[in-house]
Image (tube, rainbow, N blue to C red; front, side):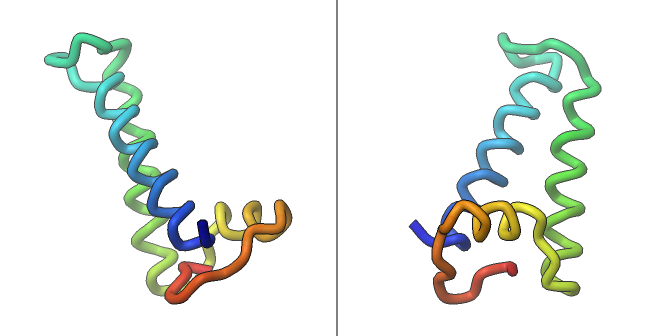
Length: 73
């Protein structure tokens, strides 16, 4: 997998998990405050589209993951 694929997978997983934990209709509901995680992930993806700064890409580079086409970092 490339950094672009990891970023998409992590972002998708965090959004789905935080929604499952933050929406009252979910059987996994814990607290509505988990929705802040969803907002943070969305905001980070949005800013990285304009700035090219993506903390996850920096972490993945340090772990030795190779860049693929159109990575956010």
